[in-house]
Amino acid sequence: MKILLVCNAGMSTGIMQLKLQECATKAGIDAEIEAMPISEIEQNLDGTDIILLGPQVRFAEDDIKKMVQERIPVFSIDPQDFGLMRADNVWKKICQTLNK
Amino acid sequence: MEKNNTAWIEHNILPLANKVQRNRYLQAIQSGFMTCMPIMLLGSIVIILTRPWADYTTMMPTDAGYNFFKSWQLLIDKYGAPLLLLRSMTLYSLSLWVVLALSYHLALHYKMNTIITPIVVLLQFFVLCSTKTKDGGISNDFWGGEGLFAAILVAILVTEFYRLLTEKKIGEIKMPEMVPPALKNSFSAIFPIIITTAICTVISLIFNYVIGIPFPKAILTVFHPIIFVLDNAFGLAISSVLSQIVWWFGIHNTAITSMLEPLMYSNLASNSSAYAAGTAAGALPHIWTESLWWNFMVIGGSGATLSVAIMLLFSKSKQMKTVGKIAIVPAIFNINEPIIFGLPIVLNPLFFIPWVSAQTLNGVISYLCMKVGLVNRSFVYPGWNIPTPIGEFLSTMDYRAVILAVLLVAIDGLLYYPFLKVYERQKVKEENVELIQSGS
Image (cartoon, rainbow over all chains, first blue to last red; front, side):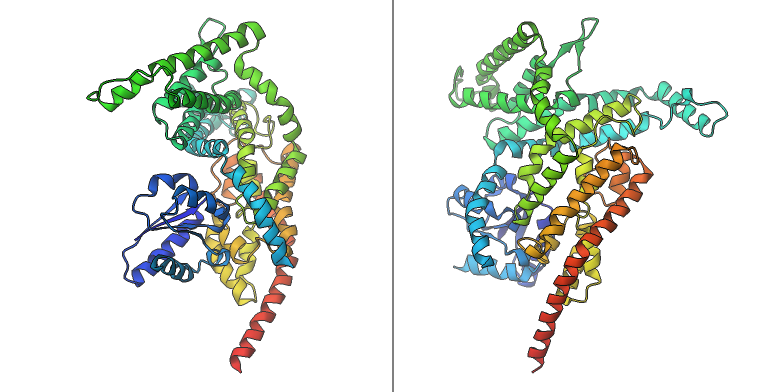
């Protein structure tokens, strides 16, 4: 599973990235999770299963959905989940979205 | 009621913010300067090393420190040539690096060739922004901080023009299949490069001989009115308020700050050059630099939330205390998403006042301190992740900045305290209700 975490400079999402990695290991899933700024998304689309946006860049959701032409699911992380780093909530949502 | 208000905001303001934020030029400018950070940092280190804090020739041999500063200066005179060369190639050539970096990021966005494009653009920068020295040599007068505005303009305009030529395939020479890609690329670029260079040469000649002002100087003159209106304590305060309002809606404020970067970076470069030339750090030409904003105002993150993170650790509310525990380490490094989304501050009317005013107050107070000479003006930008008060010290090389930094954190704390207390009362009440409910 390849997950892209997007924020503005890739720094605050780095913390979420580590916690999500823990969730994946606990669930026994081999997940490649990368944190990056918006400007790097396009070069990293190969093999990506899902794109998550930090809440401070959620306005870019429509643009990014257009960029991936609906082939890859995109959603914005809930502000409170992001702020309190509730990675298990985010992980749950990832699994729900991908199992659809 | 609140839900309706925020929904309106999300529908009307967010798309506008999106448009500005995604503006490819602002993004390229931001990425370009970020790429050049190591060069600027290197330049700063070199300047600090090659400019003794006091000029020994103005001291008496019996003064304290005379020998220290004399030996420092003599060391530089004898062995400092490599460092001085570095200084010329980093700080005094800043515009060259910015041109390369900016056009690279723009070319990347447009999926253009990312090595040929920056090369072509840099060539045009040399064509447009080189002046003559008194003895007929090429001058680098406008290759440093003075050329930054021209650098940004040239990088954007020439990249766009070159994109036009290559996308419309104007003058493209087609090569047979078996030719290696690198050769194919450079050959097909021949005519676009010639056309671009010819046009820029003509423009440069027009500016130098018809208008009578070198191109980069003319650009500075054009921007002068805007800079004049903006570059003062009022402009600083208004910019800070605007950027915090945008942030309160949960939108990253780079839309506003990337427009300020050209001014802040060129002021910083100008201060660095002045310092290198021997100007006292308290008399440097500019106050509003990159460091003023990111090291003196954004303490703990936007909105100056370092004091908030500390206070949260001692909160009586379980939820607030949890936010504090998660937020404190990032806050030391000036990252505060955990606070602004976790408390939350975003879209929370209660915190609007301290959120907008703490950072702004930091800016105005620091500006005034620097204006009257209580604290040195900044000439180094160590980056926005350097913890307070180290960042404040490094940017001014002034121990008094440390005192100012501590004072600012205290003032921010006082500003946020009443609002945090109100919030805490609310949260504690909610938590007690939960306890009672779960108990029964």
